Amino acid sequence: MLPYDRKRAFRKQWLYLGTFLTVIFLTVTNLEMVAEVLRSGRKLSAGWMESYILKVLTGDGIRLYFPLLCTVPYATGFVDEYKSGIYKFVLVRKERKKYIMSKAITNAVAGGSILVAGTVAFILCTWMVFLPMEKGFSWRIIQNFWGKYGQMLCQFFAFGALEAEIGMWISTLVNHRYMAWLAPFMSEYLLIILCERYFPECRVFYPPDWLVVQADWPLHGWSVFFWLLFLTGIAGYAFADAARRRIGYA
Image 1: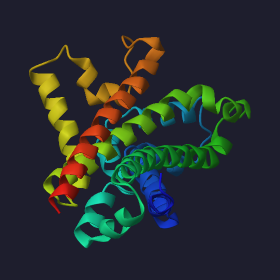
Image 2: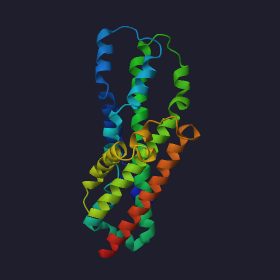
Image 3: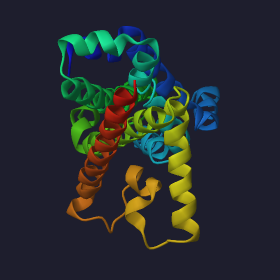
Image 4: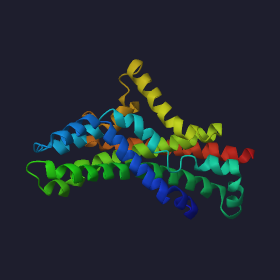
C-alpha cells in the first residue's frame, strides 16, 4: 500500500463513522429484544447475552447493511482521483502498476477491517451493557472471545474485502462514484435471486452462506474464508484491468 492510500483509507473519521454505524445497525436489527430487557430490569438467564450476539451476527439484517458499510472507507478512491486528475501527479512518481495495486489492496483491507472493527465494538458494547445483568457472570466469557467469534470475524473481513473490491471495480467500469456503494448491494441480491430460483444447488455463490456457515462446507467452515479471499483476488484483478484501461483512455 502506498502511504497516502493508507492515510486516506484509514482516516480517523471514516474508521469512527464506519464502526459507529456498524454498532447502530447491528443493534437495530434486534431492537425489540433489547428494549424488552431494559424495560423489565430483571436478571437475565445465563447464556442470554451469548445467544443474543449470535442471533444478531447470524440474522438477515447483516445482509442488508454489510455490503454498504464495507464501501465507506475507500471504494470510491480510484474514481475520485481519476475524475479530479490527481492520479496524473501520482503517476509521475509511481509506476502505474504499483498505483493500481495499492488501490486494490488498500480498498480490500479497509473494507474488511471496518466490518471487523464494527463487529468487535458491537460485542464489547453488548458485554458492557448486559454482562452485569446476566446470572452466573464469568470472566471466562471474555477469555474465550477468539474461540467463539474468531472464525466469524475472519469471514466478515473476507466478505467486506470482496464487496469493497466489487464496488471499486464496477465504479471504475462505469466511471461513477455512486456505483461503488450500490454495486455490492445489487450484486449480492442478484446472486441470491439466481441461486434461490434457478441454481439452488450452487451454494458457493449464495451470499447468505458466506456470512452464516452451513455444515456442508469443508474444513469446519474455514473454506468459506478461503473461497471469499479467492473471489476477492478475482475482483481485484478485474478492477486492475479496468483501471489500466481507464488510465490508458485518459
